[in-house]
Image 1 (tube, protein in one colour):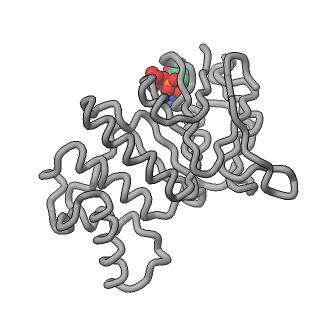
Image 2 (tube, rainbow, N blue to C red):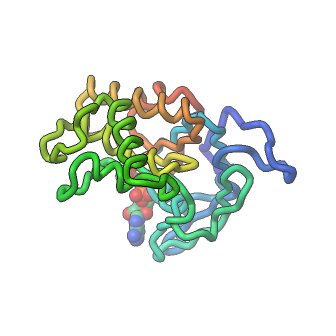
Length: 231
Ligand SMILES: Nc1ncnc2c1ncn2[C@@H]1O[C@H](COP(=O)(O)OP(=O)(O)OP(=O)(O)O)[C@@H](O)[C@H]1O
């Protein structure tokens, strides 16, 4: 455990090797130009829980998410393992990790309809045009976007776009969610609405969720442990 990091809850062991269910980060160290950003970080995100990562600008929050996701810039030196439900995914390319990632600027493809954007995220395992369309219609309805299939994304409000982006992510059947300040551009009432929407979906599906934020209200709403990185 690195200095300054506080983890108040750990999941029960799941695998025979004692590894926990959910997302487990084991002894993660990351440095840049010989300066340590993270030094031996251990963290467990149980299924359905949201763990929040906070810390000052430059403390390595986004860098940590990039390492977990598998797209850390080659300028960094990193070691440590990422496990999902007991399986080590550290060496897998990003597209094979099955992680759902939402950023601050989550853009829908402007040349596709809202429905086609969601269908783009749809797990390739869902076969048949009709079944895929039905699955997307269902997700749109869940997001309060019933009847929006043919809509141009440019005509959506910020909140509608945020809900559509979450649904596109969830339709890919991720096994964990990584959220990097996804609510920060939304005004306060909308921020609360979208935050509750994301967390309630993550809990309902049992997705381990790692949230990076500067906002204490986000961390309170997440309800789980808060890990504070230090500079
Ligand atoms: N590609 C890169 N090459 C070199 N240094 C980088 C690169 N990306 C980030 N850094 C540096 O790594 C450090 C950590 O950056 P990171 O973006 O993870 O911080 P953060 O905690 O997410 O900050 P913020 O809250 O401002 O988003 C910073 O000092 C940053 O300048």
